[in-house]
Image 1 (cartoon, rainbow, N blue to C red):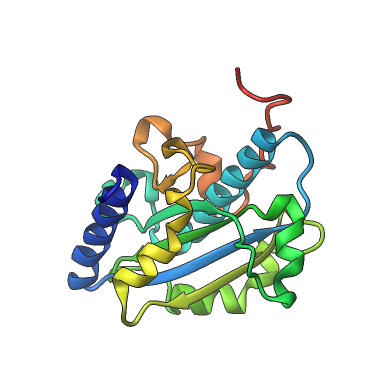
Image 2 (image 1 turned 135 degrees about the vertical axis):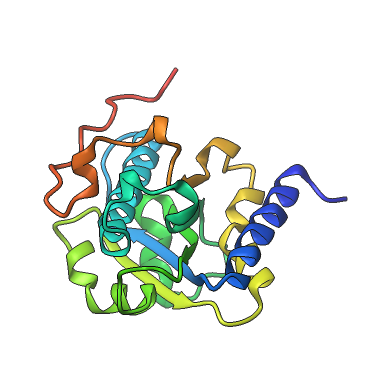
Length: 203
């Protein structure tokens, strides 16, 4: 029997399929992090905030004035936390230990009117050092174009949603609604440092 979370994943798949048919470019993203301090809730908050920072930085390269654009003209990212399975290969052991193995997958779609000349995958490959490093929250961004098996990739990217460890409210949809948007300076390459994370678990 299909669960409500599986229904939701199917809904995201159809949302991306419609965009692909309209010429949008889909990409599979994986974000792994350096050690983040604090409680599990604090770590989760820092990861979400970092994904929003990365999205905002990429957004300015895709859309000249993102805050003036309609939401349906902006790149779409559906991001979900995930945890490594027990059969993880040896060379992935580092990712299984840091932050208790918590990382993020995402399906991203870039509109055909993007100002960015390269693909999103090429952008992250060529500019990895701008986003990741020992002095940053992010350890690595893996990006691969989705050329076939769209349903399989979507299901894999969002498989963490099927786990009891991931709640509905932990799925991050970007862009957020206009009422949830961060300050304007988040949408510029000269954005100020991220605000401080909450000091304790939410009640």
